[in-house]
Amino acid sequence: MIILAAHLAAAVALLLWSTRLIRTGVERGFMPELKNGLKSLSGNSLSAAAGGGLAAMVMQSATAVSLIGAGFTVSGMLAPHSALALVLGAELGSALMTQVLVLPVQTLIPFALLFGVAAFLKAKSRKTKQVGRIIIGFALVFISLGMIREATSPIGENAIIQSIAAYFQDDLVSAYALGALLTWAMHSSLAAVLTFATFAATGLIAAPVAAALVIGANLGGAVIPFALLWSTERPARLFVLGNLVARGSVTVVFLALLLSGTADIAMLGTGAGQQAITLHILLNATLLLLTLPFVGVLTSLADRVLPRHTDAETESLSALDPAALDHPPLALACAQRELLRMSETVQAILVPVMQLFRNWDPEQARIIARREDDIDRMHFETKIYVSRLREGNIHPSQEKKTLEIVAMANSLEEAADRIAVNLVALAKKMSDEAITFSEEGLADIENFHDQIVTNGQLALSVLTTGDAEAARQLVAEKDRIRIEEQKLQERHLKRLQPGATASIETTNIHQETLRVLKQINAALTYVAYPIAEETGDLLKSRLARPRSIGGPS
Image (cartoon, rainbow, N blue to C red; front, side):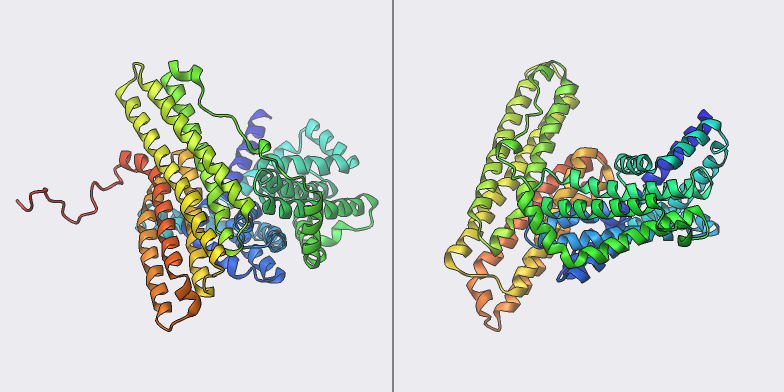
């Protein structure tokens, strides 16, 4: 029994990891294109929902789409009601993917694995490598579902398991709550629903229990982004609260129908597993149809009831523990955590700063300035902490690490200065002079800013995981952004030629904004340099053939 339970747990773990593998491949290979597509489709609620559905099907995660939508709303590029439509569509897209992932394609799995591994290991292009990662992820999803089926068949014969399953058949409310809890624990409604459907297909649980678990999974799926985004800016909290209220209400209605026996779930498919998946799709389609016309009302209600965070609520304790200075490895870990806090705070002021260029908001500018003061304080305290650590007897490798930490802290502080001083001043100047970017110019700057935000998120990932591949990608992004900035500068100069008034009035601010964003990106990418240098991925010089200072020999 223990071996079978371990087999089942390993299969579920593989399912979670494989869906994450797909999402990672999409994020690393196609995130800029995905974000641009979502922005272009978010002009109205219907197209926003369609875009969210497609994005969730590609990323295997409605939560990931919620996080992207949060970034859009905080930066002012997307209204909260449009972000809510985006998420509603994403949940339906994720539900539709559960049907795709239970298709009988076992004969194709070996070929998919061979092709995916070959593409990942041999491809020279980053995008091709990530396509290989995505294909591997899909193949592993099907393998993990097969493992779940193999493990549940003998487990279902155990008397204890049968009694537990029988209990839940008489207590569907508890099954509903358990489905929500398990989905929260798995942090993936797609993986949770696939697991419950597989349990039902193998006879481990009855169809009504599977239905209750799936309904609960939909509630748990709404709790995940709500919890993740609760501490972010208010616009992001508005749409995740609206989603939670709408989804919670619909799941309660579906649970009531299940308990009353009004709806016959046998009509949803030939087997219990298919019935669970069809119910999941039906619930999300119903939610979308009922809620989409009222997304504005929901976000307005959320705005009325949502408490406003005070400055005191956003304060956090320093990670720099003086007691750890006698233990260099522990002290270095504390300094690394403080760097992570700095990076998170830089990201928190980078995302909303673009909103000031559209509509000057003194309160938002004040928040950015206060957070920049926090970054200055963390920068100063980190340098003092590291200098005290270096006073002791530490290993040369640890000395090198302290220098890297200080250099990264300097770089993050520079990025914060560029945002809070340069960009805010440029936005204030536009407000004072009552000028605006041209429509094309604003679109260029917003897209460029969004690419910098994406790289900031990648920098956070590098600081958190130390992943060599992510570090390599971040370093490569520095050169790509430099080339992109040159292209955008050229595009701006071409707009000046016909004598467009908006372009002429804002030409200096436009070009300076692009230049500052490029500098912010360069500062953020520096966090990857120590890792890239250690793995040998960093060139010593950009020169095609470095020469001595005195000239050719």
